[in-house]
Length: 449
Image (cartoon, rainbow, N blue to C red; front, side, top):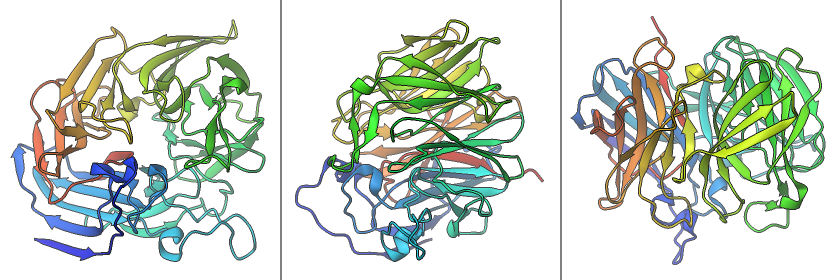
């Protein structure tokens, strides 16, 4: 059974790259049940696969990053693909139009598009974008991914929130930051406890409003990336410009001294949207894995690099680990901030990049080996989330991703065995419509019991 509520899309004779092909938005919200499956969905998978991304309601957007958030969700249960639905996140920008200030003349942090990520912490499912507050989404099994509303940690959050928070698997704490593009303090570090209470908010002194999309967490440290992409309101498209002459640096803060000194260490100018993982290596070394661009602004493609911080020497060693294009890196989230042997990333099309063979890459971070799953001509995956098969961090599990097929202009949800990703898919769920390329998501298992 399928139901749909159409809206009207504006037309363009020559769409920009981020509005063409599978970057183009869909124009309605759909619900479909009992979806056809090739292969067998593992019985252990009971929950939601949710993925967020930009989908401008009026089918027009000056940049890929600016479209209204839309969550695409597939519910798996009992070996069945129970339902698919896509829903816009009903932010105040979506319902009331763009606005900068609230009724009291202050910056309106509830005004945003919530289009970048969707995470769960302390029982809340939050749709995120780095320019505003999170928006809570209802993903209980019998619900429709309705928007609950903006969430500001009971009034304690007074900055925007990154779209890439990190949950410590040991403490259950949620670490995140907010950055400002116009006024100081340009960076604020936040920490919420396992119950969801915001317990730490401290400004960090940086000299310019750089675009800080992601950061790093280890068992003992938080590491910030102050990279030379700087706010410039006159810059076309994204209001950020590449200024390599400013240099680049990593800022190290001890978790046990959250209001203490941030130690800054220089690195070569570059840009990083996404980190794979990080971990402490003894008392004086920190190892970070990133998808690194040599330049920002469509001038280069990212590759996997390792940065090794030597706190005793005050240096960072930088090593490229792979020459294949890779983005949207992930690990088993139960090993976030811990030594994880395996990680994975996606190789596929970006706006303006031209065709790139669609693949998932599995990295053995201990041996350097790389295993590749190619999806075939014209088939392009998005970011893949890890779904565990049991309670052993780093153990067996599955990679779940949406895959677009250009030949049929449709999408599938594909499940791969994470320990043998070169093999044929474990299951392929055939969706009733294409899922536009988007950003980030998660496998959200049903709570135990």
